[in-house]
Length: 285
Image (tube, rainbow, N blue to C red):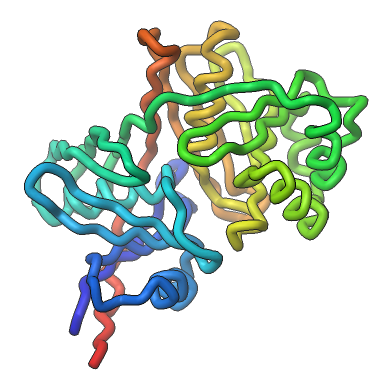
């Protein structure tokens, strides 16, 4: 059996970098172990498995450690591939993943797309000092020197948002991944998203550490940026541009906007995705 696969560079910055993400057709003959293995085979950290349906396109996301209920940059990658296959410049779709149905949109010219989607409502809470201290210590931040309270934010799975004063401090972080994995596992967290204080026009940088899902540091993390946008909406920010991936030599940028909604901020998140080449289809007997 054969499946078409494309390696997409997601959330690029000025045509460079981005997170390599493999998008493949979903096949019932694939085991979950095979889905977990596929991203590493093609040099990606995440894989997206796509199954078109009458009402919605179903998406499943995998890393080496297992299945994820949601993946923001994986959703951007899937939208780019779906638009590429449809061969239209303005593509819209209803998507389904993690038990929810939502809308996505991609516009582009055949190899380069701007893709955005609705990540759903963001749940926010404030951890106690006893909860945040082990995570901060593992990341390499003195809990006494944090410049703002940490937040727990969830769109499918919770993660901790941690603010640092500037990009230099962010760049210098060297987390202890074993300690961080243990601290996040104890709290049921996906990982820790550390971000610099945003400029007045909404520009910031961030690093996402998620060793528990087999991704010590993510090149781009759209869902965590959506969480940040929801958090900062209460602080006067309606638009964010967040740079990621510089510490990995893969510059990436995620864009998020918010508007008021009946259950809190309504977020739209995404970025630029390019499809430089298809991955050679693999045969299974």
